[in-house]
Image 1 (cartoon, helix red, strand yellow):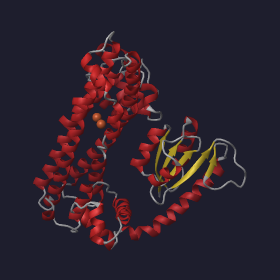
Image 2 (cartoon, rainbow over the protein chains, first blue to last red):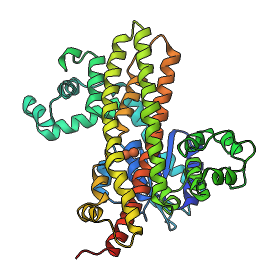
Image 3 (cartoon, helix red, strand yellow):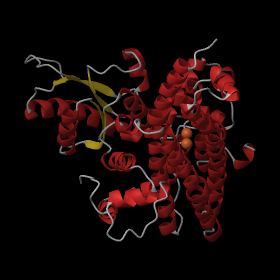
Image 4 (cartoon, protein in one colour):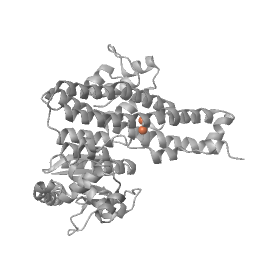
Length: 192
Length: 245
Ligand SMILES: [Fe+2]
Ligand SMILES: [Fe+2]
């Protein structure tokens, strides 16, 4: 089950890919953008599992920065505007590819994604460590304060927070606080 | 559907009723009879192309709105965005708030959770109001003045002073994300809250939050990808026309 973002300037290619993906098993949601700025916005809001990105598009961020804006298990498939050799890697598709070639490559990535999700399903619960971090976040502590309290680095706190947000689908501190109260991690009286 | 000037306005709405929001925000009154898009626009004093471009973007969503919408006077878009703001503030937000209150009052079992949702939502309302207030009171007036002064032989000295030390880019940098919290609320209601016994009303709240989220998303695109780039261009023209010193 994967969410796919198509980042492609060409209207024809975009429509073609949407059509293909709509009939591909394992794709839950498709978004398509053709402009660098809307691509970046959708990337942030939609948080796709697979980004189909035309390699000719110049994004306002470099490759590393782009990767950091995707979630940890997301992947990028590049759309290439020239024909590709027979043994081209799986993460490249060409606008000259046949329907079968495209389907095969995309299915390969979806397959991996499906496998990952199925085993993940049971572990979507927060770990005890994450719960502890969440508790402090909900109580209004900053990353720095939490780090000092638990004798870990700020970097570790940030990485835990990223995982909490991904697992729960909740981004803001107030949202996390509400979750913590609903689940008895903190009490309503603890905040005010 | 291909949207064109001679199609009936009522047919347009029948084919895609989400466009009613666009009509409402342009303050086009209903009761079209068999009038065409062209006729309705002329009667209401709305530029036909502006209407067509807006309607096409909302309907098709397969092109970058800046492509077509940037070629109109900026005041038209500002008027549209303002009317969207008042729709949120006067109607959509209070409506969701009152629905949460209603569940809180009628459903004993979930009243505590609903209290929490209400607290969260009210926090959101104050952030949201501040966001809109900034745009209404500072940003939009600046944009309108800029466009006006650009037309003049000599700019208003007071505005000139303001324009020298300011650029809309500053605003873009701090333009806050007003959907994030709403998305959190939506996810909490959808994934973590036991549904109250009045499920019909609860579902309705969720639908309205989904709608509002989508609507806000469009609104932000119009602000960040059409309005602001257009204002940046106006600023450049302004400084070219009235160079310093
Ligand atoms: Fe706004
Ligand atoms: Fe805004």
